[in-house]
Figure (cartoon, rainbow, N blue to C red):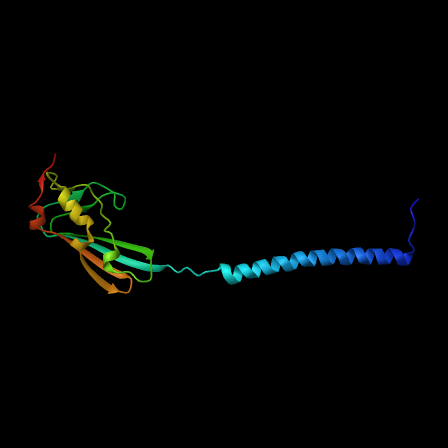
Amino acid sequence: MTRKHGVVGEIILKTNTTMKQKIMWMRYLLFGISITMGLFAFGCRTITDYSVNVKWIYINETDHFITYEPNHVWNEFNVPPYDTVIYVQNSEGPQNVEATDFIPPINAKKVIIDSVLCDSILANELYRISNYQGTKLAERNFEFTFRFNDNNISLTDTCR
């Protein structure tokens, strides 16, 4: 047999139950707020990427047509006689960057000259940043120039 509480007992029981539920949810709420605040205070670190602009200039000072096997940067690289090819590269980088930190965009196994002469030595020269004339135009803004001339063309062999 169940015992009936009076109206007052029922109100007290409901009040006690409601307060216990509120206190329980309040603890979870406070715990969640403190975790969130902790993440905001200690978890947010600002990572800043700086824009780096590079202009790669390839000047052909000879009467030879220069090309090379395609790579991941250019599908086709052709420098007609006495002409210039410019490749502009915009990317993200560190705050302090120097001219020696760059790697040229050309990574060819061999350079082809007039479809007859091939050279792997010239291809290696294109890949070394020290063979470029580098100029720092402004902060994180550079220009690199490589010149094809009779001296480096004279070292090439017949293609095999």
